[in-house]
Image 1 (cartoon, helix red, strand yellow):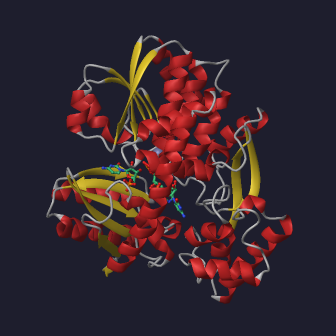
Image 2 (cartoon, helix red, strand yellow; image 1 turned 180 degrees about the horizontal axis):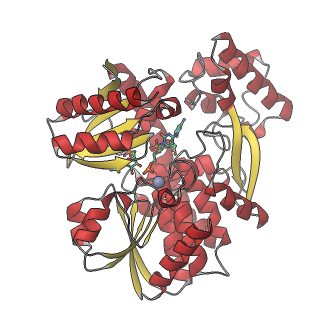
Length: 459
Ligand code: C5P
Ligand code: C5P
Ligand code: C5P
Ligand code: ZN
């Protein structure tokens, strides 16, 4: 921890010497929160800045940035070679597996931590923000937690761990956060309970996940009214009612013979942003992250950014309303996307894959791929393809169990990309890339070969 804080201070010192900083960040929840933390901390430090959202980085984009001073957040570590080649003057706060060592990079992997669970892009950015404004930064923790949850950093242990815990302690101490044991489903604050149940896929509950009728049936069976004056949300249920629902979900999983480790995923640590209004997406880190994805993944990251800055400086009603509208469409796209993906999903040797072609947006095909585990084979990684302007987008997702068996998707993607001429990166459990059109089969063969080797190499 001491070493990582020392690095954070060095990065902050380098930034403080500048009058203008260009922030370059990623188009997802962690990317927006990282960007917002960087943006707000620069503003507070009196440094001019501008923010640019990108889907991914490549040599061309790096070269274009070579005349500016850049703060890369939630990306950059995968492009160290190009950053050095084009002599960029920059700092990086990221958590993806680094391509190499870089003096002005704060990445948990460089300090013996795992960037998939121990610290997110927004967490790394927060550590630098701390030194930019030593007296005025703790409120930014709210965003750092939303970023970590958006990247599913709690998914391994059903709670945040590692360096994230340090942030939580600080957030709780200053009254910005509350940790609660509760259902780990998306939608507790805002969705009617039966919709929340229908949309949950982790863990998949047979007869309930993906089924509106099954979800309503479950509540009826327990004698829980669906409606008061309005549809009842999870937060409207009494303690007894909540307990009854959780017991019923557990019972269903047990009836289907699911292992305890699977059933335990129903309940876990949930993170409440205590300063935000109850019953809004902003109150719950899970929902906040989905709200941000619903803006960023549709080229509307500026709206997500305004929502983030709004929680620090007084709610931006206009942006919040817009984001909520986008969220409605995002939820629809996800549920339609899952149907398409499951329909097309095929097994291929040691992997399974589907090609979304033009039917699922390249920016959400990764989210859809992950959610496919509700039905897909848990023993094989999922590879998704989707057409995009630059070629073909690849998104790969795996399970924790596969990672424990030796699987490393980021590595597999990197090797397969080298063969077909693409560029990608990510984490052991989730990775992505862009490859040339028409190279899908060649990519899949090579990817499969590497995956097989990784899993076999383990004792
Ligand atoms: O850029 P990147 O860090 O955004 O994204 C991390 C990705 O890893 C997300 O898509 C997140 O959902 C995924 N992930 C996952 N399962 C986990 C941990 C992370 O699919 N257990
Ligand atoms: O791309 P990655 O795998 O990050 O996607 C994780 C995101 O998927 C979460 O931040 C959330 O927005 C969304 N999600 C959801 N409902 C689920 C599971 C994930 O909205 N049941
Ligand atoms: O895009 P997707 O959600 O599948 O991304 C999964 C992970 O792979 C993310 O961490 C993302 O940053 C990384 N990725 C990458 N290069 C790409 C696409 C995705 O490093 N071209
Ligand atoms: Zn991230």
